[in-house]
Image (cartoon, rainbow, N blue to C red; front, side):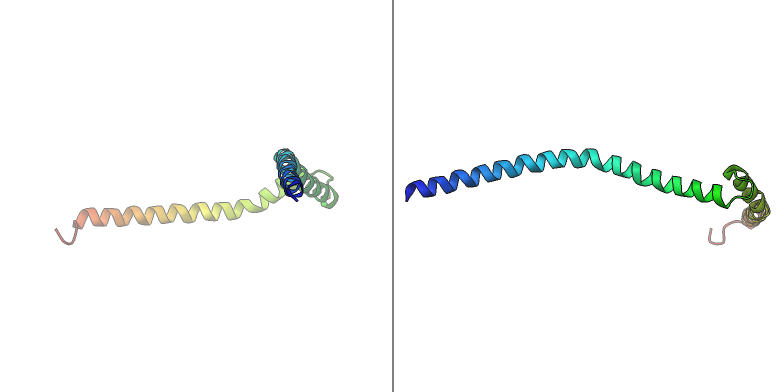
Length: 106
């Protein structure tokens, strides 16, 4: 009976040791595998994007499509810049008024 208990304890200790070594091995593999999988994942995304750009572009070059899209966006960028400029001018005028009148509660 005592031999059976000792055998069970030894088997449990061996099982825990084997499980620990296995987990350490797989943890090491996971530490290596996660960056590799991320690189493969993002490379796949970029390859698909590039493939769609080349297939859908009339010129056959994605670079020219990007240049055309930037040209289409230039009027919007110009409007945003002029709006920001107008807002900064308004803020400047408000600052001048406050400096001229002084703080209300002084």
